[in-house]
Image: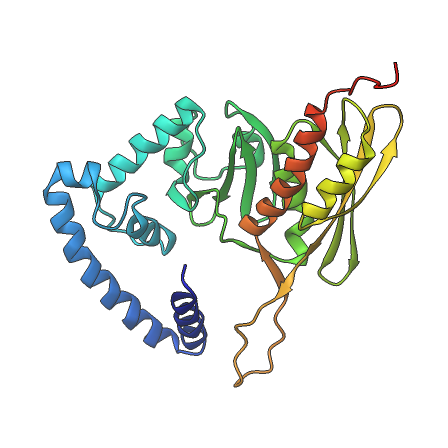
Amino acid sequence: MSKGSKDVTEKLTNVLTHLSSKQVNTIVDEMIELRRKECDECQSNKVLCILQPKCGPNRDFLDILIGIEYKNIPKFCYGQRLRETKRHIDLDEEISGGTKIYLSDYMKLNGLKRKKDVILPDLEKIKGFIAGTDLGRSLVVLINKDIVVADVEAGTVTFNPWDFQLTRKNFESFVKLLIKRYDFLELHRLVEEYRGLWILEVKVKIVSKIVETLEEAIKRSHYLLAYELEESDFVRLIAEIQLIRSMNASVLTSRQFEPTISLGELKEALEDIVTVARNLQEIKVKPDSTS
């Protein structure tokens, strides 16, 4: 996203925050009416809808309609979404961030009985299930490479919602879940140093301890602070992840905004650490030049 687009998005978000429900509904209804004309045109050409949908390769407008619980979604387009999702599941491919389908259809795609009231043990039956957490309204699970968020009340599923904003309340749950994507990392400790600043420590099994390599890796990392050598073949990597206070606060309100970080930013921080951890695993013992 360009800086200009980001500025407009932030201003629009601020404006919408202070509109009445009636005003917001008017804007949403007009937007849907305009986009549905393109949507009908797209669906009338099935080849176009399959290969090059007008709302983009990821069918973004469809995600918006499902997200706002719009009842009259484009059926043919949604059918393509289900086929695409099923293919990704069968091939164990990561599903595009923000992709949405209905929870009942997700259960069916995984060979499970459709249920009105889904609980975490139901999702644990899905092939490839690694871990999950119950956040009340939502169930969040790690299935193979995908973070899957099931909104039980809305009856929807969102795959890899990297734009989702994490707060202090759910940050720890998502760290513990997301880190399980990497089977060679072990979470050692996660503490909030002070409000919004978290210290993350992971243990990594390594081939050999080349301290100089670790020091250089930490210099290149945006998140790693230090390391500690443990036992005979483990190293503990220590990182700092800072939740940032929202900059969308209006001059017309004194509301205090929680410091947040997006799920995508958390993923980026972990991948920075993972890059170092993978390199440590690949280090080969250097021959002794003096022998």
